[in-house]
Amino acid sequence: ALCALALPAVAQPRPSQPRKGLALTTPQRRALVIGNSSYPRQPLLNPGNDATDLAATLPDAGFNVTLRTDLDNKALERALIDFSDTVQPGDTALFFFSGHGLQVEGGQNYLLPLDFTAKAEADVKYQALAAGPNRFATAQPMRALPWQLASLALVR
Image (cartoon, rainbow, N blue to C red; front, side, top):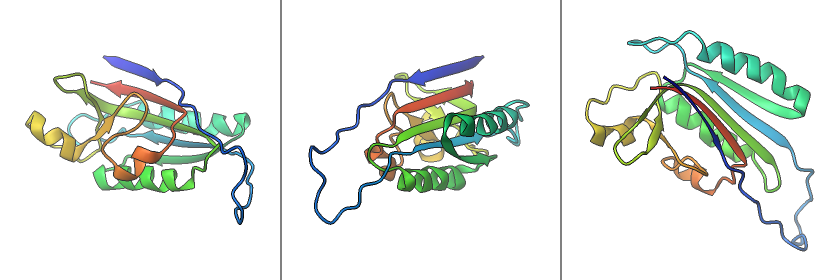
């Protein structure tokens, strides 16, 4: 079953006065688009194409796009960390993931990298990326990222 989730916008606080010594920057629109298709056990046909199509369209809406496809766990975390490092206060950040996902007892959703092999629910949090309503909870650097929009197209 295909499940698409749109996560709510998160307001970003803005200081009333700029701090001395800091340069003011123009808010940017940034997008990280990921499509995982080449899973060894259960390959998917569409995620790579969906990600590529979206990445080609977003610049028309003013987004600076980073496209990544077929990521293992380490590369998925690295892509998220690198992306979070580019986002500045006031920016509009969009995250899109298409690929395998799963939901464990309690309703927690996870995005699955290509090298996911967990057999027990207790191991899922070590091999997949937890997706929460406002942020991606497992990657420490992501906890502080003020997500504004995230879209997940997960095949469970």
